[in-house]
Length: 313
Image (cartoon, rainbow, N blue to C red):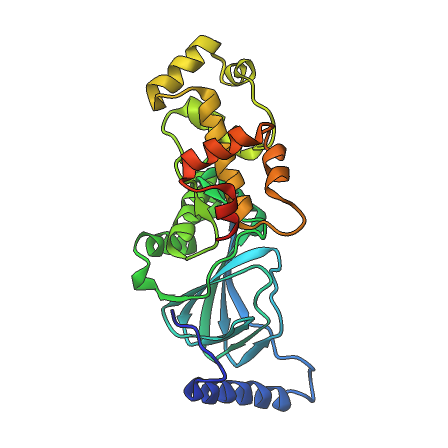
């Protein structure tokens, strides 16, 4: 991972000083006419559903003091020139062909070299987190956070082609339904390629059976509620008998056990993040496990460890 520590890497410290001097010198030259540097030339701005794409050209050094998209994840692609990004973990230095994913409100400062061309693909936090859940990921209580890293475009495989497609896409010629499908595929690639703090479910992943997938998404969206077979059957417009046959054929278990396993996986992730405000009993009760002895047994059978062992991880 190409993360730069400004305290230990003299080479990048020197580069940063040069960047800063260039920007400061440019500001001084223009102080008689303006208190700020001229804005970059925006040559592309478009939206494909909830994804926003921008391409900016910087004719001279430019200093950005804070993130302009506090509620969005930002995928930065340097097409030409260079960018220095400062965030909580230190400096990141991006050159031509480099790609970096910035967490929401993470970027404090950016210094852009002159004659640079930078593309930014923004996706709302709420949208990417929603897609993550629908794709079978479990979010921690702190929300989705990506690990700081820089990649070359050539390293990204299929994601590289999706990035180029986004940059070249014509919004007016793309049907709304296709935009949603495209966005979910793009979200899937981001979650797979950029290391993050969410985990895919242990066993309960997405299903190719549309009726089961509909149930899975419903339970994931409201994991703490009680689900009765009659309500589940009505939700997918089948009889209770057909519902049982569907799950027996697909998984060899009952709908009740399937939903219990989803709840257990939510509990597992919550116990991993458990703080002093809650204890294991409270968490189990919230998810409908009123018999704590039975809960401990099914939990151990499923994960191979007790709830208290999970908490100690």
